[in-house]
Length: 417
Image 1: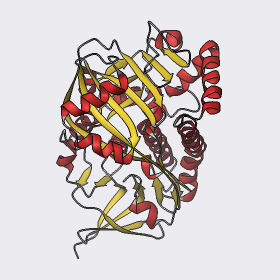
Image 2: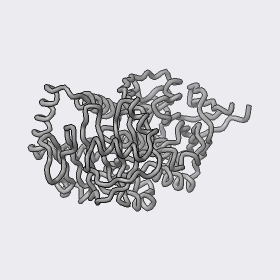
Image 3: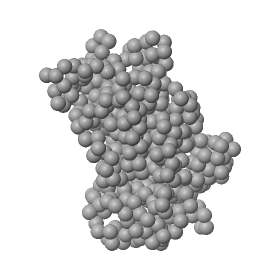
Image 4: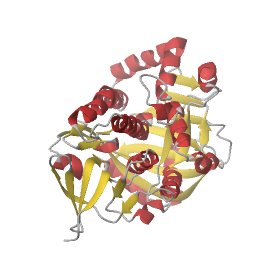
């Protein structure tokens, strides 16, 4: 066995949350080791991750503060309006809205946000490339492809055994490997799971008509369908279907895919031309029963995996990153052991209520809208109509979606730690 390596923080998982934490901690002077079972370069390929993410304006400020703004700006599409419809066909259009709809407009809260949009749509691959470039300018040690085989915690340090047989000792180990986190399991942290029996079909299409920065989400009996604006007159489609139907859509020809699309949505999209491969992602809920354990912390999907219905999964993970970075930086200034229980408890207390509340809220939202039961539909449509007519409530939803509420970490306020 090779000599044992030492680091302040070992992060398992080089995805968007893990890589962001590595970058943030390195900028605060921590020694960081980032490990991932996938080759790091493979994660930068366009075929690795076809998703796009709605980045809240507070999260976008954080990415700028971490030095990613110049790389992301050409690929970030403003979302100035979100139209949500409950119906069997798209109806939340500016011309002829269905009665059961919600309309969120960035101008309505512009005075409070400095003219920020409701969010920015960015393709995940663009985020990965920007993070890789930024990490290349740091002293972060990246070990990939290599995964975590085991974690043993002891006084003052954790010893991590990697899949290549080597070992690393760290003051803190962070699990950021997603819903099947090895670090979480090694810590004995339980997880609550709920399968939805749905999968999300993700595809990029080029539109014939301008999308004007408008995001559409409307709820079919089988699940939500989202049309999300991208740069260069494109849109990301997130089409939720029962898993078997979703797999069939992935394998369909472009002509068959467009035929299904037009049969469902008529000419709402205009002429749309598919670009690139289609991806299918199974949808479920996972919620860790704790966010910390001795010398271990969880972030992102390792702590809370949610349905993409509200586009908040990555935003929640990056809130974890901002909070954990600030807690660790403050602890070091005070001369504390960054892996000690009181330090990690501060992180858990900061994030736990928010993550549990949002996870359960999104789960309830999916269950409420992913059905066609007439009495339930009538009640939810009345609720949507009421929210649409109560301006303060509507503005509160927009501020919450923008990540501008609550006790925000400094990075989410656009301030260095």
